[in-house]
Image 1 (spheres, rainbow over the protein chains, first blue to last red):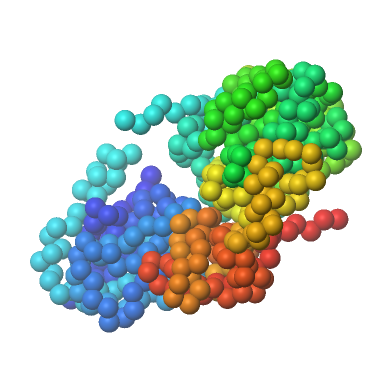
Image 2: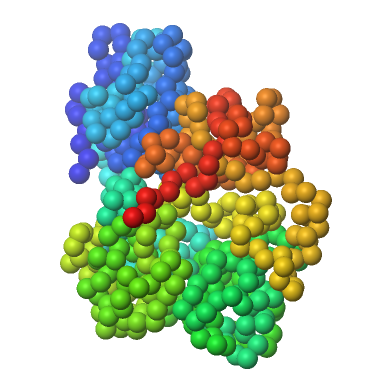
Length: 129
Length: 364
């Protein structure tokens, strides 16, 4: 059974965001990493790039497939997990911890209302399965 | 509407073991059980078992079988003795590749052709048309096929069979038994490792599969199509319909060793002779990505700003830890070491033509 921490907010595209003041740390969910399987490549934006809620911000590749990453909120990228360049498997091993991807300085915190809480995300994933 | 997918005799077994099933060549097949990388590495280090019962098995028998097959395929089957298998291509009159296949010489006037699932029906129609006098019998539905691959393949199969496995050389086979059921056992595979393929009666497949997965020492990991694809690509083996098809010739694909232009006649021969005389203009090469990124099927290959080719297969190679791919490029850019770019999501990523196979096992 996949787990979805209660302090995170979730997109329908299977990203999570941990909001801390005016910024949010972003990654993909336990469900997403399990669906993708062995992650072997992660392509992330450079620091300073502007991302838009719902728009593509990078790519994650398993052995078999390429998947787009979608920003759960808009803003400027202020940090990037460079360790994923050499250790993409961290996304599988620790999707909510060492497998984080980017930190966004939120340009419009009201956007966060569009995201799901852990209960709603769990219900969505379980309905799909 | 989705077409109705067919199932192999092992379908329930795959579901029971939690396999992730995908549609492939009209069948519902396991793409992985736990992890593509884990299954891949099990085959490289010990042993894995693949259900490849979707493949097509076609018996060709009769007094004209040898002559008609000799005309049908590219390799020289007259060099075979009973108990030998041979890799072949099935060409159209223009020299395009309809499919690749194995020809097993079972006995005089008795051959077994093993073709790919996706093209089985069209292959069968073509074979019936081109071999009008031989008896053609499609035994695919009553035949299950298990591939047991990896350095421990001999050790894990030995307790199941009376066959003396160490006497079966590469591309040789015996008609023997497995768990007391008749079995054609051949030392062939699609992984670049030592291993065997077991052609079994459909209703015997589950028992053999279970025995391998549950009782064998060392443990045999069930492996899916995901690992089968990464293993074959590391070994530089081609996938029919993806790397080779009717728009490509065996000369372009580097399959010259399996094309005997000295043979009296075969379908596609004159087209190939014309192509050879004019010069083969493009070649299938191995590419290693030097920059960051994984080349995938369909990505453009660039030389400078110009597109000069297209990737046919590409993956992250678990054994090698690099991104590898196959692509057709102009013959003058096919030399090992040639620097090219692969366009990945709109950006050119540096790549280099490299040796094929990418992976070669060490033999004792």
